[in-house]
Amino acid sequence: MSNAGKKLNHFVMNFKNFEKARWRQVAGLNAIEIYMFYTWKNEMMNRQQKTPTPNYWISISNAALWEQGIEMHRQTKAGILRKLKKSGLIDVRRENGSAYQILKLK
Image 1 (tube, rainbow, N blue to C red):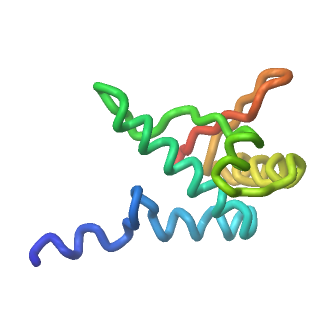
Image 2 (image 1 turned 180 degrees about the vertical axis):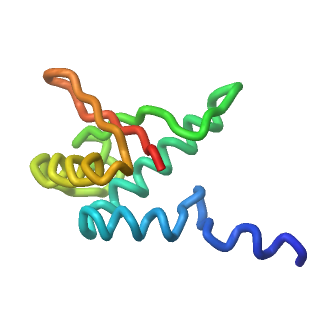
């Protein structure tokens, strides 16, 4: 019972309520889908690595989103990522012809 209050802001797979709400506030409802996908992939990377770090560069491709049941146009995804980067929540990188990669900053 003593440590019950320590995990109030965590859900399954380390979803953080206030962080998720901030993404929605900045970039809209579809940003939550990207947040959940990013957090899931980041947790999987943490479990695979021998020396885990808090955040990894995660590829956000249309095919990977569709495989997880997240249907989103590429223009919508690009707009969300631009808004999140402008607000300072993520960093985005992309090479020509490849998917966006994001890194959560805050």
